[in-house]
Image 1 (cartoon, helix red, strand yellow):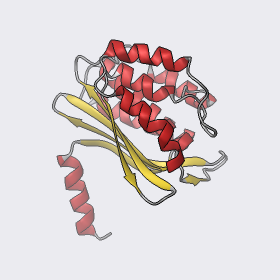
Image 2 (cartoon, rainbow, N blue to C red; image 1 turned 180 degrees about the vertical axis):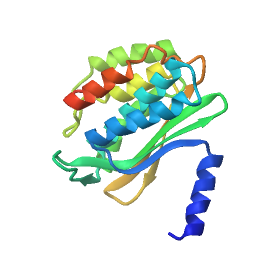
Image 3 (spheres, rainbow, N blue to C red; image 1 turned 90 degrees about the vertical axis):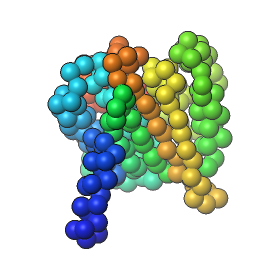
Image 4 (spheres, rainbow, N blue to C red; image 1 turned 60 degrees about the vertical axis):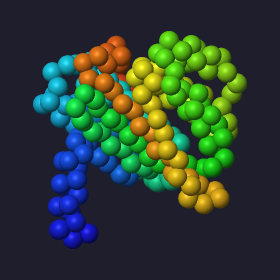
Length: 209
C-alpha cells in the first residue's frame, strides 16, 4: 500500500462515518482495550450513556462471536487460539452501525442462517418470545460454545436491527457479515449492561454467548 492509497482509505473512512475499524485476532486482551477506545471516542460525540452502552455491548457481542466461531484461527500470546475477522463501528445521522465479518465453515451456515432469517422483520415482542423459545431449544452443533443466543439477544435489544450477508468462498468456507443498527435517542438497548460489567466478564472469560 502506498501513501496515496492510505490517504484514500482515510478519506473513505471519514465519508462513511467510521469511528473504529480493526482486522485481525479478536483476543480477550484486545477487546478490553478496544472497548475503552470506543467508549472514549463516543463520549466526544454523544452525551447519552444509553447510546454508548448500546454500541459497546453490541461491539463486545460481535467481537466475541468472531473470537469463538471464526474459521480463521490464530495464536494470541498466552491465550489459546482465537478467531480472526473484521469489526467496524460507524456513525451516521440517526443511527450507529456495528458490523462484523469472519470466515465460517459452510457446515455451520445451515445452523446459523435459518436463525438469522427468523429474526427478520419481527417486532421487539416477537423477538423476545423467540429468544425465550431458543433458550429451551435443542443443543447447538458440535464446536459451538453456546446455543447462539447472543445473536437473538442482539436482535431483541436492537428492535430487529440485525441483518447479514453471506459470501461463498469455496465448497468448505464462506464469509459472513453481520450488521446491527442502533437508533440514536430512542435506543431499545438503554438498559444494556454497563461497560465495566462487560469488561469484568471478558476478563473472566465468562461473557455470555
